[in-house]
Image (tube, rainbow, N blue to C red):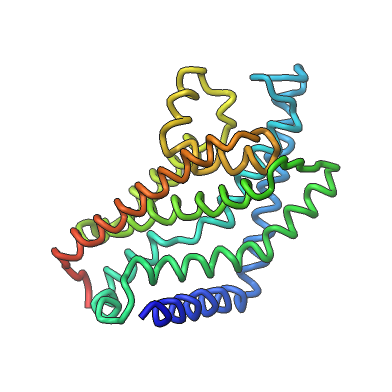
Length: 262
């Protein structure tokens, strides 16, 4: 019984990755836009540190690397699960998907994983080239925890995207919801501004809330800012909570299935 979902998921992961990989023009456009964004961020943060070698206990290099790694993770892990699910709901395709021998959340997780893997194939080399060009380097202290934290971050982001996508059952336009979600996740997750620039009390709160673990925790392990195992343990707990919440939301919403469109 377990081999059937595993084979199906593996096929969806591979198929999703191949579909994205065949879009060469799209890959070049995304990579070019990503590099332009990093270039702008580099000179923005350089200007912020022009008059002071340190701000909020961070040097220019550590602050920029934090933001650059966070934006790289966002580019790789942001796979549009919410938009894809909402589009299926609006078109009525969701009715066909629900009769397939695979749960809706597992199917979208496999597709999202395939897209994330495909995006990493062309985004990560661009990121490495950018670091080399500006003579920057990363110094992770615990690679295993860094990899684990990135995986958990992907699951957290997928869960919140999946729940937002389910809003397509009750809302006809998700643009405002998804835009607000992306802004909130990036801001409170430390992808736009390192959490070191936040007030101390707010940092303490975010350390135990899920927001700080979307990006700040994996970035901390990748850059070497974090070496303790405690943050990834808290992140793992929130991942379990989010998985349960996403599954529960899916079951509740699907009971009240309303298909918009033909």
